[in-house]
Length: 166
Image (cartoon, rainbow, N blue to C red; front, side):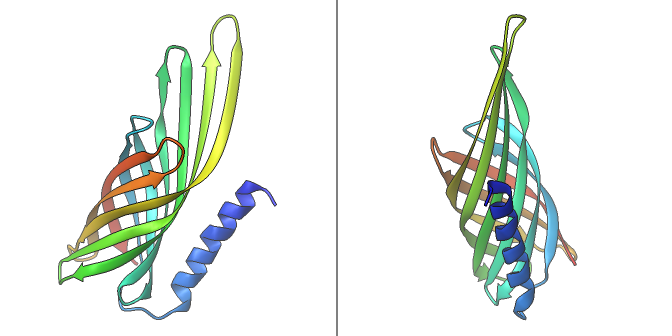
């Protein structure tokens, strides 16, 4: 089985689990901006949140970091996340949650000069640990997250964006 089918299988399982249990919260989809400390670049992405239990949601996301060029090297980085968010503070207009989950990061490095071209890519699985907060404003939910990806080299990811109730 190849890596793409494994990641797709995890994503489909997360989606089906989110719909298989009747929960108290709304399903949400959204967009986000992030900054990764290892790549030192801004990322754009999409996320979703599927209620599983009263205080637990499954939250898949994808972040594509803008390519970074330095000394003839160009780096492309994308990460796919399958997180569980546990809400330990949930009031009328704010929810604070802990993040735990799986991460798959794929990095491609290209070197291009007038003499030679070379490229290499690598994908790694890691773990996500962090915290976040939602701020309810009707059907729109701004949010902020801080997570650490435990993977070779590690990466702190600071992100925020907006989710929309479905």
